[in-house]
Image (cartoon, rainbow, N blue to C red):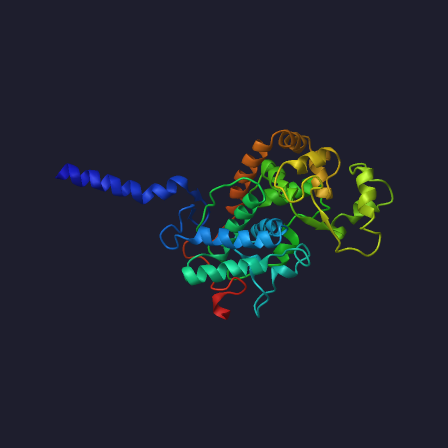
Amino acid sequence: MAQLKNYLFIVFALLAVAPLCFSFKTQGGYLYPQFYDHSCPDAQEIVKSVVAKAVAREPRMAASLVRLLFHDCFVQGCDASLLLDNSGVFLSEKRSNPNRNSVRGFEVIDEIKVALEEACPLTVSCADILALAARDSTVLAGGPYWDVPLGRRDSLTASLSGSNNNIPAPNFTFPQILAKFNAVGLDLVDLVALSGAHTIGDARCTSFKQRLYNGKPDVTLNQAYASELRTRCPPSGGDHNLFVLDISSPFKFDNGYYKNILAYNGLLNSDEVLLTQSHSSMQLVKQYADNNDLFFHHFANSMINMGNISPLTANQGEIRKVCRRVNHYY
């Protein structure tokens, strides 16, 4: 009988820590893919279903939902602060220079949240919705799958200044971009792999116009490509005209982005500097251009790394009922 009790104790102890075998330690606690298995078992399927409908309506939405996670995690960590509208206490990050007239997809996040609140009230955080929507969008576009560590909670505030200062700009030099990544705990591989998200999506004329009209030809930009860009991105006006980031396969998540960079067909300055301003990043660009599987593997790992930036866990923050405002104002 004593042996049986000891055996049962060991079994229950192992079961208690089993989720931690697949978890990721953060400053605030653990994140793990099985977080909602009991509290909201259909959570991931609900997110996947809404994202699939949104991307079917508009393929560009896949890139937009991936980008939301980037712009959220680089400011205060992955806490859904980006989703908050203006309040009497703080200004929304949506008004920052990197986000204004740029980030989109908020209505899709709202739709997901409504569905989750119907299934499991006040259970699934907006921060976790962003992480899952980014993964599902990547897969729908043909990219890699990864198990998303879950258990984030939502912030009670936003940081307009943080959004203005922490998100890398499209005209940054390589050292400036790497410094922004290092500041949130990401490294060179994360930088080059995550830049591969530009294999889908669009950029506005204003994001690269300086490359076309700087007084002399940009030697890091294919001049035939530059001439084509000038037809819809004039010296003045047209700032909001959209251009695909990957001219070879704009809606397919693949390594075409890196092949474009090698041919000097990277749309943004921040794309091409991966080849021209760092030997280490150049080597990674060449490896990813040559090996799609390697790119997929590194991208999935780096998305997990980015999703682990300073999340709120345990009793920090809250689970918002509506992603656009804290519960106090609901």
